[in-house]
Image (cartoon, rainbow, N blue to C red; front, side, top):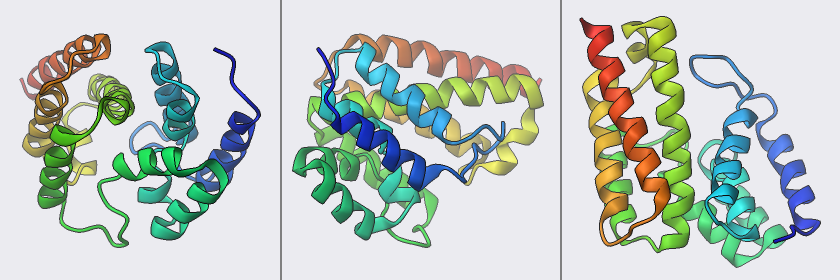
Length: 192
């Protein structure tokens, strides 16, 4: 598959919307996460719209809410905008309380079509790997930066894996399962 010039526009939009954001613990440019998620989507068979949506999957949630959604719809079409919306757990600012927001997102994932599940799985896979790396580097102090804390965050990753795996099988789920297992193991070791 060959990507069109729409991907160039997606890179520009990603840069514009996220260029000043940083990852929670590592301080790496936030765009590194978006690029990693898009790479995973591409490597696991996603099409161009899924790749673009992966580049922009946090735009609604973290860079403008509904107005950004409408802009993405105008620039990239309904399919990309709908994928981005489906990968967002909130378009509100400030965001609603963490646990109910995550529970709503999990319920949504259980009903999501495979195209959306692939993008979400890639997102959670990269996040789980990053969190495990941060735990190895920093230790339990990592949990202070997560609204769900230690227990809630680990609960969430386990539930995401279960929700994505309901009525959907895909090779990325095997990777996600390994990443979640590694995260749980590293968390246990950090607590010891």
